[in-house]
Each structure stands twice: as structure tokens, then as C-alpha cells.
Picture 1 (tube, chains in turn green, brown, cyan, orange):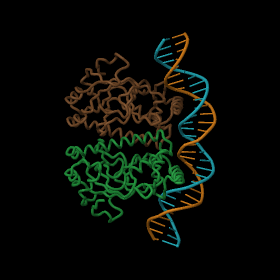
Picture 2 (cartoon, chains in turn blue, brown, yellow, purple):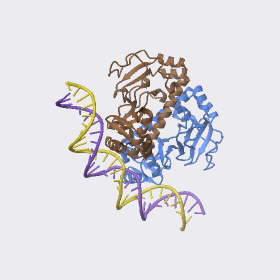
Picture 3 (cartoon, chains in turn red, blue, orange, yellow):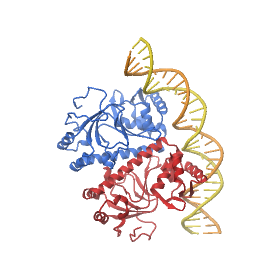
Picture 4 (spheres, protein in one colour):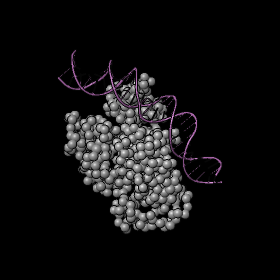
Length: 247
Length: 247
DNA sequence: GCTCAACTTTGATCTGCCGCAAATTCTAAG
DNA sequence: CTTAGAATTTGCGGCAGATCAAAGTTGAGC
């Protein structure tokens, strides 16, 4: 875990503004996506980055806001959501640490098309949008990372569409939870814990159903010993049995 | 309408193989996406293209097949679909003429992640995948077109997710039909006709519901004078009333 | 330890939509 | 014209899951 100097000093912090800070020049070294970049390049990227800390439930950026930054998530999780005209929130995907997000430039967009909200207290590097093209031109591998990110997201979105069209609620919840185990699972004694606070409401938005249905499912699964769940906390004991349900 | 020399000579033709043919060097001139490219560039692109004709219901490429080509749709419509393990087909989006598709390279993919099936007899330009990077490097505007395409698709996919999560069947059908009117509408006396054969089944796959529900809706709407529909054919008379339902 | 708000659970009811089935209409081919 | 397959329509029963309602539980802050 990199020490960026201000890590433990406050719980609440910048949401709108950016904060300059000394960044550990090795933060990128262990991210799989950035492994291909040579040390020189990583250093150059970091040199121009700014640190952003965002508390749980605050946003990195809002839907329809001008895209003046793109980011790399270092800690915490981010969920992308759209707001419907009726004010309902639909979560389209989760971003785990180590991934780029808010990369409107890669999609030829001028504004962000989703709201990026911190699922848990988060830490990210941020660059002004103007640097995107510059980075891509100067470091071809960087552009490649952007493409990979977009490609993977596209795939996830299509999977979600297939799910919503064909799977029943129980299956969708099981799959959503299964994905979270992979993307955000932290090993604990006897199982895998979702690494951030997850309410029934959150999970229902992710699976495209209601809080009530999620609650019923989790209760049933807990009775069957597949998982344990307290308030805002889920520990999956038998991922394999979850997959059977999802199948 | 460009005359490529073989246009009317057969109904069934190449699906796997490619066919070399003389290509009208002005085919790209009137495509909005390619308007920004200078004549020189357009000519260069065409010089290396191959023509592909695909009959209705045949595929341009299959899901999980190696991505050895990317294409530009000139005539006809293409639908992207995924096949579930249970063999069910889910349509994720429609591609109208004038758009690039099969651009796996832009997503850092080696294989196609969807099946691209011709909704109607189609005509497309095709280039070997190896040329993608070359084109992007040589003609920056071309890369921009690719980004715009990906960005727009991403947006559509997210819209679809919101729809499936929040809207009821009637609304989803109305929205899907509304989108088709925009993307594939041809003005006819008194209304707008969907420009390719569209079965109830097709529309149901697009809206994520069943043929039966679609049939019921269309019947009701026909009684209300919103549209007219024969077998495989839909003419929308009052798009505005359709939008009210979709709202 | 108390309080209150946020989160969760569980039951009861209601309904949209799917699944099944059977009739009907269309159209392309012979 | 005839025929057969494909596409469409329509009715009906059932149920998954939403909605409504009301407790119950947890934990952060005082």
C-alpha cells in the first residue's frame, strides 16, 4: 500500500476541487494494466497527475458534466450509474482499483455520460483531459490500455443486457454477486468478502431488481450456508454454489 | 446509389469469402461520418477495400470468430446479437448504413464478441484487420471516427440497460420502435416505414420480451391509429404518440 | 446507555407478462 | 390455383416478482 503522505489524516475531503500532493512514484508498478509500460513512462505519467480523494457516496464526476479530467482508480470502488427522468438510479457497472475511468476522450465525448460515485472511500490519480491525446501519442502502450478498458467495459455492458433479457431475478443477483467476488473480493477466514459496504439496495440496483427481492435471496442463501451477511457486509462462503444458481 | 457492377445479379452470395470488385470512389462522399476526411484519404481507404454482399439473415461475422476484418456498412442493416448458453438470442444493437462495425482492434479484442447478422440484404466495404492501426496512424481523422462509433455504441448499450431495468414491456417496445424510426426510418405517404423486414420476433428480441407481447402491442396501436403493420412491415403514422407511450 | 436514523426482514396482496395452445392469415413456390 | 410453411393473432391460466405495509435490527453519535 503506497504512502502518499496524507492518507490517514481525514475522512472527508475534496469532491469538486483537486489536491496536489506528493505521489509515490511506484504506485503504478504493481497494476497489471500498467505492467507493460517501462519505468520511464510510468514516471512521466505520475509526474503530471493529481491526487483525488473521494469519500464514500460522493462523486468523482457527474453525468452530463464537462469531461475535464480522466482518472485512474488506486483504492476503493466506483460505480457508474445513470439517472432516469423519474429520478431512479441504474447502476451500469463497477470499476475496481487499477482501472482507468472517466476516459471520455477515448469515446470522442465532451461530457461524461454517467455519474461515477464512490462505493467506498476512494483514492485516484487524475489528469486534465487535454493530456489524453498527448499521452496516447507519446506512449502508444498507454493508448492500448485505454482501448482495453473500453473493450472490457463494452463486453460487460453486453453481458448485463443478456442477463437482464434472459435471466430470472435470483440468477441475476447470483451473477452480480459472483462478479463482485471476482472484482472486489477480499479473502477472509472461510470465504471471500466484498471489499466495500454493500447494501441490499446497492445490490438490487446492480442486478436490476428491488431491495426486497435481494433481501429474500440473501436470507435464503444464508440459511443454506452459501454466504453470511450482516448489514452492508457480504461474505461468500461457497462461490461455486453461487455459480450453480447463476448458471 | 453507387453501381458496383454486380449489384442486381444475384440474391445469394458470399458469406465466408470476400469478393473483389470495382468500387465507386465516391461512395464515402455522402456519409456524414466520413465528411471530415479529405478526398485524398477517402480514395486511399477505398483503394484497399473489398466489397462484401451478405443476404438477409446471413452473418458478416460470428461471435468468438477471429477478428480478421473490420467493415463499413453501405446498404442494409446489421444486428448485433449474443447467443446464451441456452441458445437464446439477445440483440444488443442495430447498425444503420454508414457506420463502421466489427472494429475489434479499437477495443483491443482479437475475436468478435457478437454475431453480426444482416437484417436485410446488405452491402459493406471490408478491410483486413491489419490495416486498422495503419489507417489510424496515417489518417488521424479515421481513428476519430472509430472512437465516435465506439462512444455512441457504449451510450446505446447503457440506454438499453436503463430501459430493461426500469421500463415496462409496452414502453420498451415503443422505445425500440422509436429508435428504429430514427435509425432506419424511410418516409412514405403519411408516415415513416422501417426500412427493412421486421418480424414481431425481431422486435421482441430488440425489446427484450416475447413475440406475443409485441403482437399484442402492435395490434393495440394499430387500432388506435398510431401505426400500420403488415407481416414483416411496420409503418409508424404518429411517432409523437409513440413517444408519449415510451415516456 | 440511549436515541434515532438507516438498514433489513418478512408477510400479504396484486399484477404484468410469459408460456402454452390453437386458430388464422399471409406469401412464396410449385 | 393449390398447398405448405412461416408469420401473426388471440385467449387464458399461472406465477415470478413488484408493491404495499409493518416490524425488527443495527450501529453511529450523543
